[in-house]
Amino acid sequence: MRGFGVFKKGKVGWMEKPDYVCGPDDVICRPVALAPCSSDVHSAMESEGPHLINRILGHEAIGEVIEAGSNIKDFKVGDIVVIPCTTPTWKHPDIQDGTHQDAGGLFTAINFSSYEDGTFADKIKVRSADMNCAHLPKNVTVEQAAMAVDMMTTGFYGSELADVKFGDTVVVYGIGPVGLMAVASAKLRGAGRIIAIGTRPNCVELAKEYGATDILSYRDGDLVEQIMELTNGKGADAAIVAGGGSQALNNAVGSVKFGGGKVAMLEVITGEDKTVLDNAFIASFLAHKEIKGGLCPGGRKRMERLLSLIEFGRIDPAKMITHRFHGLEGIEPAFELMVNKPRDLIKPIVLFD
Ligand code: ZN
Image (cartoon, rainbow, N blue to C red; front, side, top):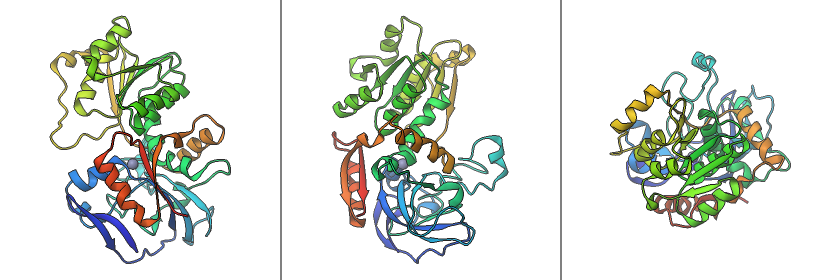
């Protein structure tokens, strides 16, 4: 098989690997759609470790089943499947404590392109496929579904972690694709006011479309002060960090209310940008402020729930797609686009006809 991956930190390219052997609980797919993500750029350019040597990148995919393991009940050759970026084996006891992403260790369920080869290849292996793959519903397009496997599940998790309630004021830091989905999820959960922080014109427009009621920019001054002014000195009920690094986390803690303000942290902070909360905010925790972090819930039921929101017209995540590429060779320019991040980029996709 042929895939696009990372040879070592900072060096990416095409690699040949032996074909997968399909285990009893696996399916092997050909790609139908792939989407590069800023996490792929982090893995390739900023992260180190033996697990990232000669590793095929990619974790967002729609596939067509070309081989199904002997235990597979619900999927057969020819089925189009939605493949979540998080695919646990569902066999670790920690999952019984309520989350699956890190059962037994950090990111154990986020195996694509970390502990196992990813989706940027002519073949994709999905483990525990009956529990992880979802059928593509009739009224959902491949493009829409491709935006559910990571962007939607991650962005929506922000509203879940921040426990957004009817009428809440919610601040979303960063309106790239994950932040846009956080905005949409806050609206779906009934937030009253949704304050989105961002500057790129097409992201701002889409944030409004997905439900943002106010747009703020760091260029107009201290964000905490701006939010306090908007909320009459009270602060927001919840904040979701989907960009902006440790500064955004600091601002998020500062901009939620004393007495139970909640912060959801969705961003992986890498490199030199170490998270140090300003002293001024340390007192926040004595005022019952909370920070919860987590990434992309996966699995079949999660995908089916998100796909239902698309199928019945609650949201169209495909509006985020700004750049389209075609065929396996399209992966490389799509990845480069994510590295260079032109101003009109929200989300690229690679389609296979
Ligand atoms: Zn991703």
